[in-house]
Length: 211
Image (cartoon, rainbow, N blue to C red; front, top):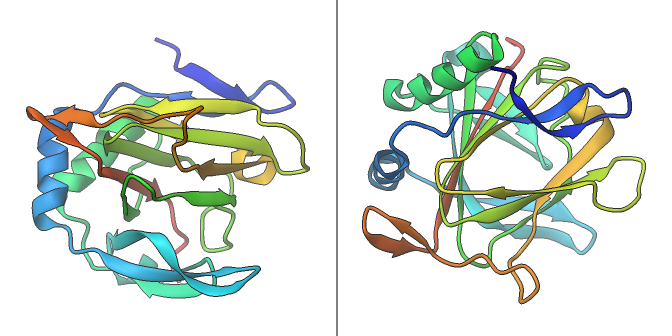
């Protein structure tokens, strides 16, 4: 079955596609909550270096791809990626007909957390490779704008269990962000295993160039 295209580039090629929801998102949320050790990070802003409004943890398949520089900082990932998390990447990559990614960034978003518009176009990422995003917990919006400037071109609601992939020239042509919820675009708490949750976990799988 063809993948659902959520955003296409100016040539009509898929830039963002929707994949099958992940297997048992409640179990994935619980696994992350119990096993992933998050760290605070700092990002460079026009007002100076500040604490990021989210926490992160990173993993890699091996030491050759464990170092990753982004947002003005360099991180060293834990190796290897836990098999229980890597299997989610393998399932998504199989739908794309692509190999399993070798790097994982796990991000924790609170109710007021956000990430400003950016592109994942660091030179350590394999050019034009798929970037897979798996979201569990609190629903949030995934917003895209043209890199050249202009109005919003796509707003994707990331539900509990949503899986999307940014493909092809997406990082060259678009910026993406996770804005804070507001009255016009509320993101109500999500039921996870019978409990309302205001935390969102995002697994972002990338293909990194061995160093």
